[in-house]
Length: 124
Image (tube, rainbow, N blue to C red; front, side, top):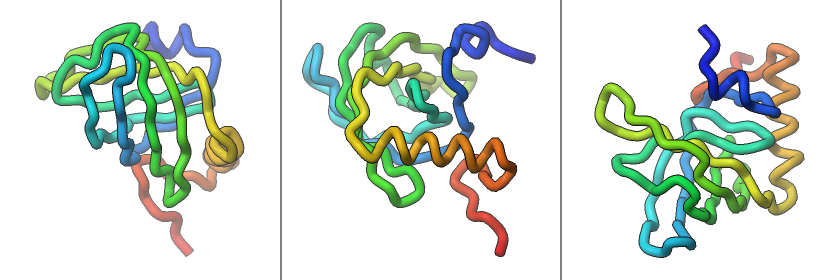
């Protein structure tokens, strides 16, 4: 079943659990290590123990398979999950090189059938 968020997206998202260092810069206050549930050229979804705030500006460092990507983004939605945590949708407003290339490479690998979501390693 396709969700409304999926229908509204302009960019593909790849399921995958990646570590993210997140700092809320507007309003200030939050600094945490979170995980993603998906990532793509236009943004990511973070899993958080609490609200971050729709419209909040974030600075992030994403660990995408050992490649570190610096990003800035804005929270566009928050959704409570069954386990009580929150899925926080972030639209990227800036990606520092080589961020766009790293993410595009992940998308292309997945499209070619070489990617494995959730951080799994490819078989030899």
